[in-house]
Length: 196
Image (cartoon, rainbow, N blue to C red; front, side, top):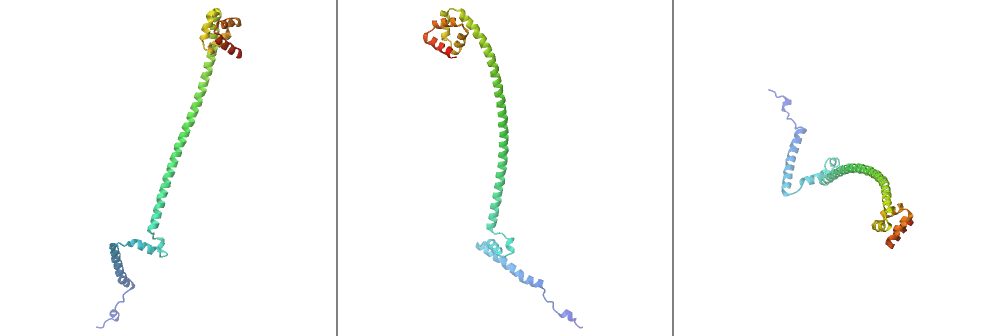
């Protein structure tokens, strides 16, 4: 039987077979080398990153430890900035709340001050009317008394009470009462009466 010449030809190895024959042992050898270096204490990943970082297009995809550290620091600072911005916003909100509370309290103080002024004016009006009436009545009583009896009583009074009282008494009666007083007290009261 005749053999087919096509069958007699041996198949030539293809590119794929060559790659497997070459790359498989290289891959195995590099894995063993990495394991041995790691056992010896050599930082293989650091050296690999540095070597890959020197290759032009691959360097864009590989980061070194320094770049990772720098990126981590930037991320930490960005986080700190965002936290501080949130704190600033919170403090501004608190500040606005306190400002509104202060404004409300100032309005309340102004209102209370106005009310106090009104009450004081009403009391002053009432007191001055009442005081005038009561001073007139008391002065009539002192005018009816003998000067010798009225003088010691008026001497013991405070000036702010004695002066209005003496003003209401007629001048000749007032003179008689002052004449019966201690000369120093009488001089002081007469001086105040004359200057008002």
